[in-house]
Length: 260
Image (cartoon, rainbow, N blue to C red; front, top):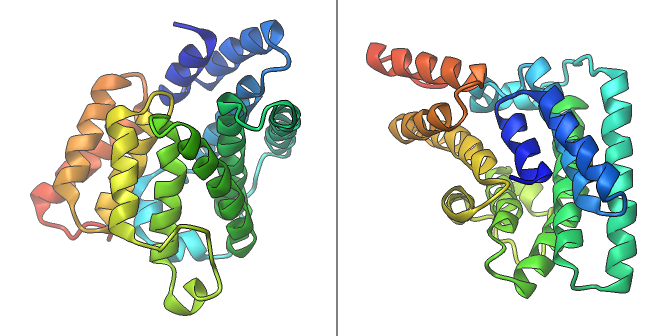
């Protein structure tokens, strides 16, 4: 297992320190490779989302909690490190793309960092409108990558999330938000994320996390329960997966409506 695989394994087990140890080794040996820095930004994002309880399914099941402007308290040190990692990844990615516009790893690094910045801007800083321009940017990189290599399955996560997100917007907002080759079809968005959950590599577990949330929002709790069970088996050190599965199972057995 190389450092990037190990870093993602540690990240999905919520061992964020372990992820950074692996990434520091990778960056030390490959300082000009944008992927290490991109994944480092992901590790900072996940740790902050976990600290602020944003990854809990109840947060995503309630649009009011997502949209409310109640100020969270981001860790300023983590924020600085996260954006430094994004800058480090994007500067190296742009350098490689200037030399070779078809550099797939560079395009993937740009997809990751655009996604990290989008999530941080929308979920932590509560600037949802500002995040939409970042969605467009990340989708453009993903579409370039998939045109070059349709089997780069991790890139379908970006296009799938964008389809679902645009499809979830109110019509009057969607009218003003145009993303090339994105129709706003929620079911197509879920299908794209399912491709990553089945065939993806680095982002396969993240796709499963998103499918849990999407299926709960679409009132398909049994599908969500099955996927959560897979995540618990695959990442037994992750306390959130166990807690969410237990809570969902109890709620389903009690007949209590999901999302309340």
